[in-house]
Length: 618
Ligand SMILES: Cc1cc2nc3c(=O)[nH]c(=O)nc-3n(C[C@H](O)[C@H](O)[C@H](O)COP(=O)(O)OP(=O)(O)OC[C@H]3O[C@@H](n4cnc5c(N)ncnc54)[C@H](O)[C@@H]3O)c2cc1C
Image (cartoon, rainbow, N blue to C red; front, side, top):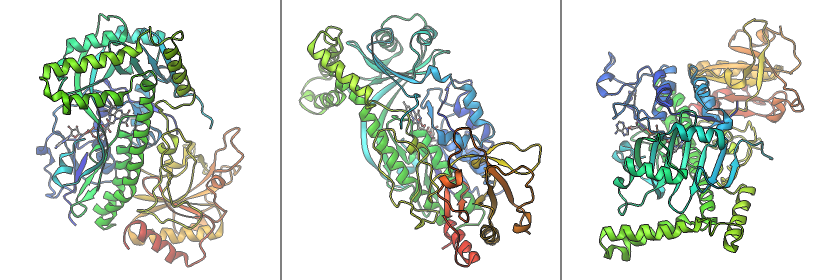
């Protein structure tokens, strides 16, 4: 997705169920009021449209919803006249769901449409869907511990690894297969290796029998005709280990796996901005593609609003690149490492995909070119069937010394968690911006971000500038009957350009809050003050902060809600804050600035200088 600007001046994982009935794109589009299929509908009384979004993929649609909520007019241009029903993502991470929670019930709609977690918690490695299971990994166990035209028009290059693998994605339905897997071996991904075929089956909706099969594709020796409906059915039967009477092939699409990030995300005097797959494309290992794009949109929306509303100069849009490009590079590296881990399993049983790719290269570009293309295809098929013979029951069994050592290697890979992983809490929730629309501090915040290891690392909540505000449950202290438990994230509205200042109930902090409210008013932005009282504070403290904050009224007194067994450390302590510390949170829930223990200097000048830096005014 790319944007062309014509400018004047809690946590659990989720799966999208991509049925036409409740396709996530339809969910996004329903909320995108000005969504339009053709450029003809962008006409309006105002001759200048501040934002034009090119591409109604998930990222373009989410950005349009966020912008409209912030009061920024935009239109979405889409070259297709219908939504594709071919599933292209199935894993939505925590951070994206946190964003969706604020989009008029989108998170609830996705939650309702997702299958029960027991149906997709596992990756299963087998010789066929009805045959021998080589191993399985449960990804929900408690743990220890795109080809953008806009981009090419503005001359931005992508750098990274191209053509990691060519694949064909076969979207099909079979209720018989769904019923079988539901009863016998529920899972999300099935890696199938046998002497006749190799493929990865994504079970999108076992109850409805909706699947996507990913098959390696080797053009030009293979062409799309090799994957016509009839051939695809035969491949499905080979991988299922039996014929199925009700297979309906819906769609067949070739695609190429890359690991690339655009050299720039913002160009043409801050008027053209790349977001989502137009800015980065990774192997779909770990489900970071769409999720990263949605988080790009969230980072960008408030900055566009600040510019369009005349609060910030257009240079604030540059901070989108400063913040999101490093995150895209990290997620690319992580996805490549995870993709390589996925390759460890076939390699252990003698099916090294790197070898297959090299053989294909030799046939396509080396001595193979001396032969007619029909013969090249026969050569390729022959070599691949020799490769697949490694998976025969005869070889891959405990009584055969080669097979037994390969099976032992496979067990080690699964036991040591060295196969394809699904959950990356540190990268999902713990991503952090080191510079951009924020003030880095000398309060012990680290100045580097650890490169991804490719293995699961836990999320460590942090209030370091640039981090996502740690979530905790809070309760408003007023007596209002409508009061209910909230998340700290609920204090940041999605439909208003508003910052949040979090303080404790102390005189110095109230003074700082008054200074922040006054400075923000000077800069034309809103700030809400949240005063965090000790967990045991009684309801009815309404008004406690009224007099110290007078004449300002945009504040809320809250207390942390302690959950049984988790009340050892308060949220404030976990954020490493002293009583008179303060945290300033941006409209995208990332921390703009924090002071661990009070501001010594003139608080008004300090807050002016903070807002001025965060809003790119200096
Ligand atoms: C097999 C597979 C599995 C995946 N699984 C996951 C997953 O589980 N989780 C995850 O987060 N990601 C996953 N991804 C990645 C995900 O599909 C992409 O990252 C995501 O679709 C990107 O969204 P986007 O809106 O940026 O781009 P797209 O979805 O590519 O949308 C771009 C839109 O722009 C339109 N368009 C293009 N050019 C023009 C033009 N010139 N004018 C007008 N319109 C135009 C296109 O028609 C399209 O509708 C997966 C990808 C694949 C291939």
